[in-house]
Length: 303
Length: 313
Image (cartoon, rainbow over all chains, first blue to last red; front, side, top):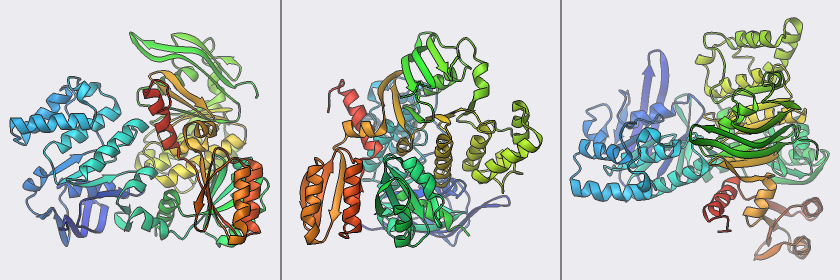
């Protein structure tokens, strides 16, 4: 099924003299998990807030779910679930009361509210804590509640701003399972700075200085990365990494478990030879670009 | 094994009825990077605050660099550098002015300060931003400045509490390169993080859940216990395939047939095997691909086993 969910042309946003978004073009025509990543200050949050209809923007074209972001977005906002970085729910209400509050706000009929809230509490594994005050929840549980709350009105688009920042590994995995499930009924737009999460997105948009620098599936972006990545296996990876930093073209070298992970802007064969000659190296493994080197390369292309 | 530079015995902290840390016993070898992991609210920050002598434990003993931290909390502070989740830079002062302020506290001044800061400014890529105020800088640069400041007085130990939280990939990479350099110089690093791939950059990992240790080992050891092992794929010309298969079988690998070579799963990659694989690559023109089980998967297995009452899932 294909329809235009998002179509942006030259989306711009300024805060006073600062340009946060400098002309974003973006087309999304099917439900998926769309990841937004990029360095600090790239404009990720501003883009997400713009898509949610929370900011006044300028654009040549800016349509989300068929609504023009430059016009009246009241109806659009009813169809969007938005999870901001900071916890925005009522701390002095319980989990169930928070959901009920949202249900009333959206005029969800009682029977449907019961059905949906019960299902969401089960899906987020929050059911046993329904009577607990939101303010007393752990970071991961707060985020799951925020997501359940955003999903309650069955939005066609759910936007999440770094929902797993500072969340532990168990809760992070649960949150991703919830997002994968949400993709069945909604377009999911999520910003992240985790490498493993960037890899799990169906499509990734890399922003820098308010522009889309690259966009594609994680595999496509990794294939386009011209940087060489070599893993040098040996007995003392940290010493290998230190020695490798002296090789011309090496951008970063770091011990990672049993190997030194070496990224370089250099000719592959010459690099492998140079690394092979470092003391303590047992095996040189030229490796395909990974998400880390891909994102770092994109960051280095900054004008 | 050398004498641990950090040693806690039965370390416990209670706040009223709430047990934040429960009988924690850990040892950290000098010059290593020690990753301290756990869910939010599992007691990580509380533990660090006790280790650096700013929070008194309810029970237990702490020795840091030969000093009884509970008896003499002030003495330990000259030997350590600390960086918290909120970097302790003064707003309103430029990075350079912050440096001068901290240097003053440690009694570093004049030419010694110029030399030391000149070196740190270079290593932490801060030359272009030293005259900016921290509140105007992105989180990644603030964190780098925070780490540079924490190492200003050349501490023997560094305590870093989620130093890379909310920081982009580029800054995280640069940050870890520097942390490993510190360890190379003999500095002991005690670090908490939520990024599991960062555990790979450390020598040891302790995982605390509800105030109790559920893993305490070298990352490689955890990988051996909680994953199927390394995947090794050798793409080789037909003439060399048999040799590749023999090398892997001799090393104890389980082989799987492949149209263009051999694939194997193996618990550990020891030095002789790596050397044999290198010969295959260099001489026989083979392509070697090694797939390392990720720490994310390893920790999911650790947590699954824990949820299963300690039985393998």
